[in-house]
Image (cartoon, rainbow, N blue to C red; front, side):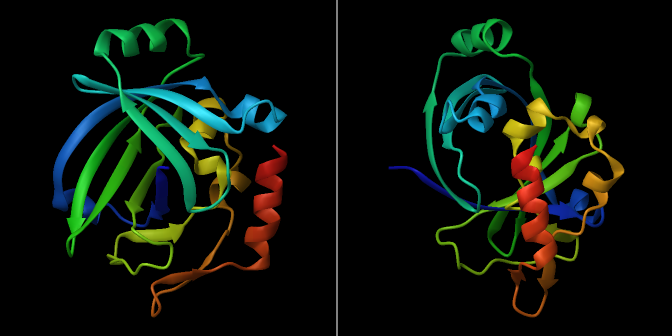
Length: 196
């Protein structure tokens, strides 16, 4: 079984840009998306993604949190293009920047189109409690907030977010421990996100 353990963060500065080692444009669409997951008719999202001359089909469990079941398979580029144009409701576009800090890879997604203005950093870990570097440009953690999941961004893009959604205080970060303490505001916001 494939398991993804991933933490997601907002960014508090553009200082990461000077550390970019590689960037690639990505386009992805959902064959089974947020609405089916919310309705309970699906327990996973199914997405097709194209990056350069490569493409993948991805199945990810609809569980909340940093650890989710994930399966990914390469598909022919022509098939991916056909799925994106005929089977997906819309496309999510972004530029993924690769930044390495102390040996750890941060994938920084700079969204385009209806999600332009949103930039998030993701880091994949081997274990949920694994330590990781916290560069000064890394902002608050949003790993458990469904509105930041790509599947939800395709359905409810950043340009349609309210000011309250953009500015919500979701987590209290303890920089000394490098971990996150969830407060009551996060629990309330998570319930709100799940009801949307």
